Length: 201
Image (cartoon, rainbow, N blue to C red; front, side, top):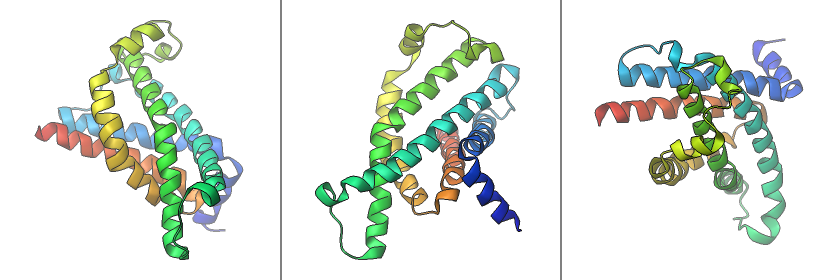
């Protein structure tokens, strides 16, 4: 049995555990690389690699749920609401696009906000592992700390339509066993792109 076959068996049998590991490793690697690009230094202890890894791992589990819910649920409304061409290759692309569109409209903003709130909490507690269960800052304080101008004006209005919807359209064209891995890799790509953009600006 080859490595690829073993990978597909593990992903199929343990989707949530593998989703946790993929995002805990790859998404945090993207944040570390982005930090390195922006500051030209490697992150220190206050960066909170361990709590960030746990947060990303838990988000990875939510993403596995979302991928399954939307990839199975969105096709249920095709017949009555969504147009198709009658040509299988084009319909396959439309299928992936519709799944990506609905997922990024209904799920992505909530996940992005949750991630930002946890990032603020980790920063406020100097990257300590206890920041994940700390009551400080409170949820109300965390929500007030979010830069809503950037969250709405950039994260929601720009990255979702210009990056995530097209990128996840490609994701849903892949076999299911590779979709979560590709999604985790995309988080690295976006982090590096934004880091270079911030450096140039």
